[in-house]
Length: 66
Picture 1 (cartoon, rainbow, N blue to C red):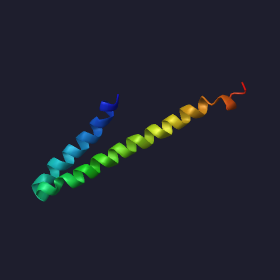
Picture 2 (picture 1 turned 90 degrees about the horizontal axis):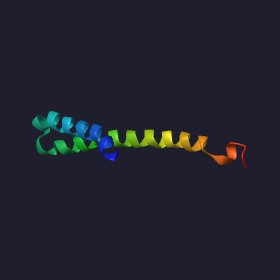
Picture 3 (picture 1 turned 90 degrees about the vertical axis):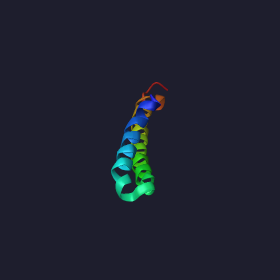
């Protein structure tokens, strides 16, 4: 579950680090962390939007049952 969601962010961070480590040296962790953070934030935003739609459908007050 949650470990699978970390995979794209980890891959993006690792790719950014290895691509920039030859140019930026030890400071390459900073853009790598930024890349991983952007991926994680986009995944969280997508999950929140999806859960919002699910909760809207499950709202008892909108089903007419009340």
